[in-house]
Amino acid sequence: MTQPARTSSARTARTSGRSTSRATTGQVHVPRTGPTRRSGPVASGPHLRLVPPARTTPTRVPARARATGRRRAPFVVLLVGLLVTTVLGLLLLNTAVAVDSLNATQQRQANAEQAEEVARLEQRVIAADTAAELARVATAAGLVPPGAAAHLVLQPDGSSVLLGTATPAPPAVPEPAAPTPGD
Image (cartoon, rainbow, N blue to C red; front, side, top):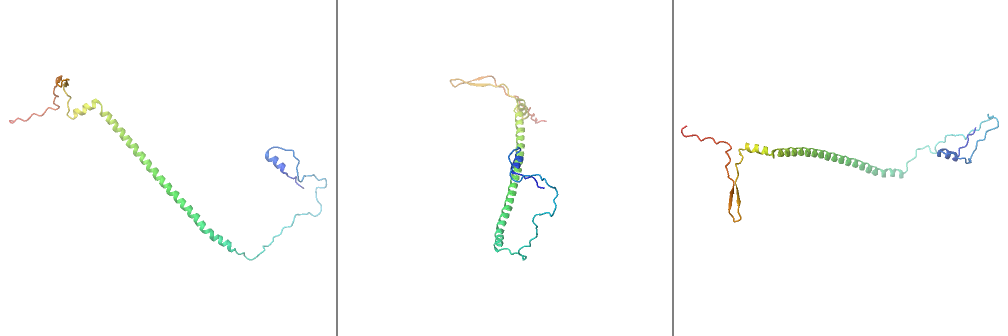
């Protein structure tokens, strides 16, 4: 039996997704009107047979082919050397980047710790700068509050006038009494 011929237009119509009604070229399937079984010898295609090679002796490699192999060896060694050098260079660069990253992380930590220390010191300065804290520290150091103050005012003619009455500050700690010679 013969199969229907496939034409390029049928393939094009199938692949493009649209149907066309163009006429086909090539073989067309025509149904047989005669008997369906053949009688007599069946004609087959050409007979195949194994053909031995032309030479039975081993072939020699031409000198040109051997020279090509010798010429390729230095090139291959050069390529392998470049590849190894590139890989080692990338490894060194990667290591250097990792070390720099570690150093940067340590520096960031140190900066954060120092920023915290600065903030603590600023809080201590702010707390020590209040009037009550200054009075407490002054009293602890042995200072006493001053008495009433007097002011000198300079006159246009160069003389001065005392305003107010100056009183001395009370002693901070009573001085120990000096031992009497008779005791």
